Image 1: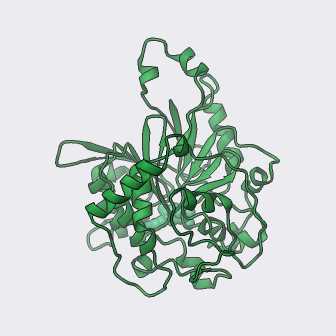
Image 2 (image 1 turned 120 degrees about the vertical axis):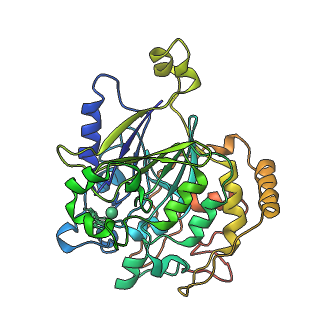
Length: 382
Ligand code: 5GP
Ligand code: MN
């Protein structure tokens, strides 16, 4: 299995796919592409209005062509959110979902499986002011909501910190705080001299503190990030001798390292018959992860939609074990395959829409759908 990783997307899907095709002329396209945020899944003018960005960057970008079906993503494409997004669109798909054929938003936080890879992910940027707040933003967004909605919440970091089974990869938009201490910092400062103020003595540092904590807790083999518009590699050793390879990628511009193609050893490709076995085997399916589903279900009732900061509630091991038992009893292996959808719900500007994929996901887990705008829940938050 081969996976391509792209740094920021910035609406340049056509150029990213073209570059990938060029890089893979000999081998054929990889099994999947992962875009590490600033994807800009803008469907229309009202989505564009919910994207935080300077006016000169306020452009529709390429996504719309994939959304309307004029173009089709040539390979399975997964992405997380960054700080320039169609925030109204992504907020409706908190748990993740298909935004176009073959293009899957991983949601605010997630763990999915692809082939033998177990991949964790979180969207957004860290900002202390918004970290402890609930998911209070609701359309029509105020100027302040447009800027806070992409800030990561302690609730999502807490959910990821409950993972105990090993992860292979982790995807974030921002870098974990202080990661430059584990790589060629001098080279980084040569390419980005203005980082010196932040990285140097007395500086605030670059990157997100909660991501650094997650990196140390989860110890994935590889961690991919973007946002800083520069390629950077680091090796973070853990106390048990195990190392996390960090790789930040650039945005899609000529002569920049924005794509990395990674060969993932699988049982099939490790065996003697290599290329032809791969060509004949069905494509890898994107799957839910049982441990993550149990965490999602256990934490769902604790979600806050208030704007006031409050301590993030959590669940204990016994509670998690109960929810895991539920998932193992009620979710079959077949239901772990994330159903392919091409859904274009009627979009009312200034309102959130109910997506049937979110409704189905909540039904599968037998938990409350906080995004059910039309339902009869006593306490709809939108
Ligand atoms: P974006 O595309 O998300 O607007 O911004 C990315 C740009 O902002 C990159 O060029 C990156 O180098 C810069 N940037 C982001 N965070 C920081 C930071 O904390 N310090 C400095 N000096 N630059 C930053
Ligand atoms: Mn960014």
